[in-house]
Length: 377
Image (cartoon, rainbow, N blue to C red):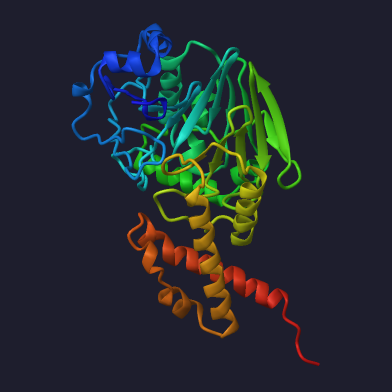
């Protein structure tokens, strides 16, 4: 086993025996686990029988299947994968919100430094946010100093309520989060989740940040913690009310959130397809030497980052098809029903998102057509 394939499991499991853990990741990490008294360190035989977890969270075709026990204590941890010597990822299910995953259907992560911990995204409910916090406490006794929420979508942001009362924490979000908090979208989303997962959502409060990122497009804010240098980039409103990208400068690791999707079909219904392409092109041009990219969904990836080029190709094809449909005066319903990408049909969420994406992009193209319409004199 290598560092990139190390994973620890909650509810009393490990990916390997204690001997393998010590040999492959070193006594230091194991010692940090032992310091957390609430974490049970048991062997792989105690992994829940209905869980399926990839051996690695990097460059894998496998996806996790984790059923979250609604009766599990909030202080129990979740599965944690180690990406580098100080960087960890929680690898979410590739699925819709349901009573099995209970909102654990997106990725999150954290960086441990000498002076504290930087958390990236907070998972989908306050309960999951608390379990994320406990997962961190299973790794280190360092305080949590920053929470960076990449965007306002529920699967990334609704766990932020669990971080409210952490002393000394600084919460960072995109300025668009303020608009989202006053939107009907928030009200509808929260109502749905409270109906679906009432216990998990009991302590929910909309995210209010201490710092809102409102730089010019692709501008950055830099933070330092210990030896870690973190750049937080404003990547615009390509996927939500406002999106951020996090760069671990020293380690050349990029947390790209939902700018590109891995192991599932993208969703464009709450952003801007032209800005998606612009931001993806900026990403590849700006970080040619990146060592790892961590998406908001699916496994992390090493160069050449095919998830970015594949998502870019998907969006480009959709824009071309819908622009052609508008130019040829094809109705929206016919255009949406007629668009198929055969090479994407086996990808999770294709059936769910393909029509929604086509509908969204058609309306974008229709608006652009009328905005540029010049009537004959």
